[in-house]
Amino acid sequence: MTLANEASLREDLAAAFRLAAKFGWHESVGNHFSAAVSEDGHSFLLNRKWQHFASIRPSDLLLLNATDPDVMNGPDAPDASAWTIHGTIHRLCPNARVVLHCHPIYSTALAMLADPELKPLDNNTARYFNRVAIDRGFGGIADEAEEGLRLVQSLGNHKTMLMGNHGLLCAGETVAEAFENMYFFERAAQTQIIAYSTGKELAILSDEIAEKTAQGWDPYRGMADAHFSYLKSTLEPLDG
Image (tube, rainbow, N blue to C red):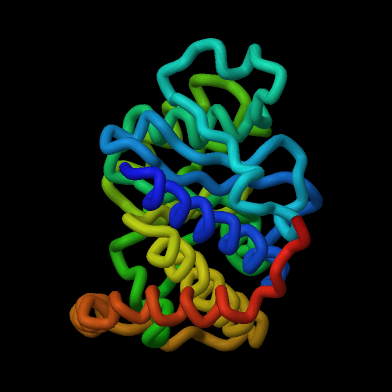
């Protein structure tokens, strides 16, 4: 990756943090987004420890090596859970170029249910039909190597993982794609939680219609770039 491309990636990832804060997806000064810089994914960008999403500039992002055992011993070491989750994914899953993990309210509420499956109820929920990994092995704050390995195994080749009793993780080839993935999953989770709140029986789509609807989203992949480009244009520039 050229310096120009890395600069563009830094700009997009910093924008994703600030947009997540605008949407209320942030949680104090926790949670983490990352993006691979190298082809093998081992070199990646990650937010600094305990910096609020709304304040993150492109130059604030750490450039780390997922295979470096001394990362957590440095003076600017990232949050332990960030290294466990993102470091492990970038080390073992080179196809997960961008990894966004946070705790959006509705997605997290869905993750708390005994049955956290996103049901195919409409266009947005059916978008994820048979396309979501669900991790059911929550073991507390993810700061142990075993937790990272389990999450990698749970994620597999999926781009969306609902982390039971925890939150949401979305991956993509670009920041725009991963962000759009999180945007639509959170909207879908909101729809389902509201539908559940009525206490009425859900009108769940058949597997055939759900799969047809999910495949129908494929031609709309370019929406992510257009949407993210607009969202970036709404951000106020940070000083400095």
